[in-house]
Image 1: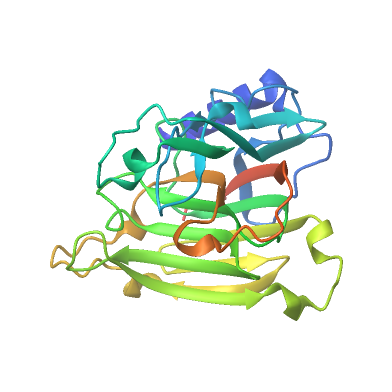
Image 2: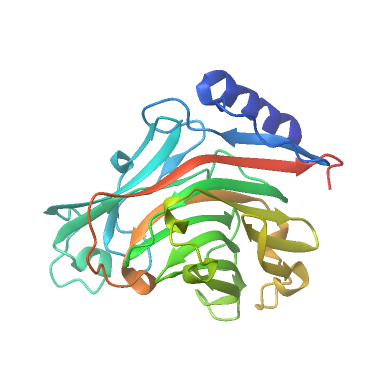
Length: 283
């Protein structure tokens, strides 16, 4: 039933104008089960994406809102802007970082497929272009559908901040809201390409019942066996053996993003496509 629903979702997406202007890669042993090619101008397809709103996580500087995401000329554009207005959730004297801020100074967007599409295992691909200015924190990642973070599991297929790209896998520990990380980083400077950030790159996850492997442009960044992703809370629950949904966002500053040194606005995270494949034999 799950596969039938996925194929119906893919058929509907293609029929609604999301068909790519270039053919999706055909991989031997894999079949495409879902994709968004962002070829219809305007707001992202609500059958595929929902939005986060407000100040959300990591003490980040941006206020998330749907208005900062649009499809244009075959790309999803997630735009960070500098704009000031009152914080509607402000509570004077509050100890909550979200409510203590009297004003919004920056806006951006965060999209996800939660409640719309999720998958257990597969090949996940995103072709995108990221700006590597100080303070920017773009990401293409997944979260598990059951349990609170990090016991639901987090996979960062693409994450960038402070001069490096990251490939991370996180699961739960015995302490609430404290993750066990399997992380690998690579400074962008190591690519030895002064134009690296001007180009589109393909980030990929190959995920099965044994391993999670994370790549950029076919370069393996992180290989994590699922034997190491069981939550350390005594439940025996493995968050990497459940369905995950996809997120795309552009954050600013916060716990990891770094200072907005010399930042120019607006700024962009551009996505050409997101595609999900499953192994043809159903494994």
